[in-house]
Amino acid sequence: MTFERGQKPWPLAIEYCKKTRSLEVSFDDGTLFNYSAEYLRVESPSAEVQGHGASQKKTIGGCRNVAIKSLEPVGNYAIRIHFDDHHSTGIYSWSYLYQLGERKDENWSRYLQLVQNLGLSR
Image 1 (tube, rainbow, N blue to C red):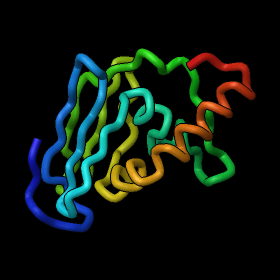
Image 2 (tube, rainbow, N blue to C red; image 1 turned 60 degrees about the horizontal axis):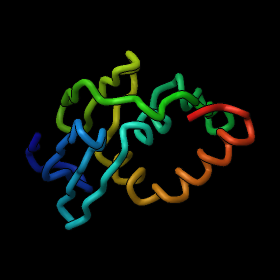
Image 3 (spheres, one colour; image 1 turned 135 degrees about the vertical axis):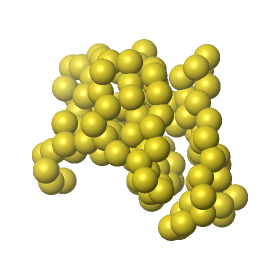
């Protein structure tokens, strides 16, 4: 998937690898991020995951084997990811995807700790 230039950061290409269940996004500043489907699912910008405020964010378990069924452009500013667990309400703006890439290690560590603390399975 390629996109016309617009806001910053701007994705140059988005590719999904079914075999590894990972999404690769290259941005116009030369940055390349690789996201597992599980990571994208548990960090979904949807109200189901994020709630309606920072204090309402939910920890979603059971997503270790989730895959992406399809990607849908949303205007010129985002994509909607359709997961095989039927979740598709999150709209991933370019800036949110960039932020997820920059904070991947921090977010992932926090998620793994929360899953363990709450007794959830991945």
